[in-house]
Structure formats: structure tokens, C-alpha cells
Image (cartoon, rainbow, N blue to C red; front, top):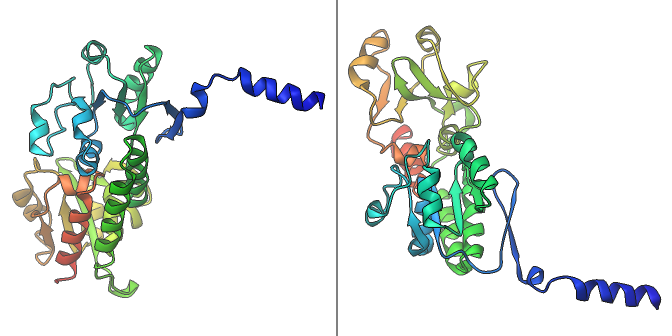
Length: 285
């Protein structure tokens, strides 16, 4: 009986606010807690902004960065620097409830804001499962659970429509981010995942021994490992002349330039469009 009384006393001493707090796990496995949905959010991740728009909570965004350019109406929001180097002073002046960052290039910003006692939440999406996870997280965070479920259901339905060949018929795709020097996307990247989901084989991940992450590659490797397709993933690549010269011995290689790079490099809901387009191109639907 004495033990029971002590337990009850301890429970009564716990602040009531803790019972109403909700906890959310980010890409760094850090836990962020809120009693109420954050009202003032700064977004430095283009894909997160696109998720917000799909969940109809874009009104919570008070500022973003240079590359947060979709949807169109959110381009007019105040900027807190660029994608790689968010401006700490501008962020502090806006007094946000939450700053959403992409830690793989913004690690220093994460550490600095955390020291300043500003809540941060990191999102680094490299797969459809991770995309669906963060749709669920933001659905709960902003009390849009039904909308989040509907969006995930739509994604799953669209993926079921893909034409996936048997292994022996799969096409080999080389993803190109830059042509001088040749930069590509190997295993563990979002682009690698997109190629695989679309039913292809990523030459940069499968055939290259050091094919992890984003890296430069020598042209001799490409000349020795002929892909079926070259997938251009950057709008700034002066690709046609460079690649025609590089692959002049392989005149039948197809170069894919008509998929918008944002559909290949951003882990938001629109990446499903990129997967569907790539699937149709490499399997001639």
C-alpha cells in the first residue's frame, strides 16, 4: 500500500503538460516535442515545402530558402538564405516555433540553432518509405491525419501501375548530375532508389565498386560499361554535345533529358511523377 501511495504521489508531481505533449522522430533519430501544432515554421527543404502544400498546411510556413520554389505561390515568402547556408540571424529575428532542415548539407546549422534553443527537425528523404513516413509525421503534427492517409494511399495506387520487367529484361541506367567532371548518384541515394522503383538498374550503384552516395566517375568506366540509358538529373548540364562526344562509339545509347530534375532530386510527393515518367520511357509504354 505504501508503494502504491508513493507511485501515485510521483505521478501527481509530474507536470500535466508532459501528458499532452506529442513526440516526433526526425531523420537524425532526434525527438522533437510539441503540445500544440507549431504555428510559425521555417522550411529550408524544398521537398518538405511540397509535403506541406499537399497536406494543406502551407500557411504555417513563414519563411523558406532560395530553392523552395514549388508551389509557385510560396516563392514569394521571405528568404532566410540559400539551401546550403541558411542565415542564422534572419531565422532568429522571425522567432519560429520550428525550423525544418536537411542535415546532410546543413549539419552546422542544425548544431547552431540547437545551441540557440530553437527547435529543429531534420528531414532527409532517400526513399518512398521515408517520404511516406514524413507525410505521416507532418499529418500528425498538424492534425491532418486523414489528408496524410489519403496522400499515402494515392502514392501506393500510382506505384502499382508501374510496368516492372523480369530481372533479365531490366534496363541499365546511368544517372548523370554533371558532365565536367562526370558526377553520378550511386547506391543509397534518392536517384538510385527512383531508378530501382522504376524497374531499372543503376549502373553507378551496381557496377562500380565505390558506387555509394554522390561521386565523380571516370569516363573509361562508362566506356567499358555501356548503359541502355543516360538519365540527366541536373538542368544546368550542357549534356547533348558533351555526351555525344563521350559516347560516339555507342551511338544507340538513349539520353533522357525530358524529365524535370526536380522530379528526380527532390524527395517530395512529386517524385512519384518522376518514377512514372522514367518507367514509361525505359519500357516504352
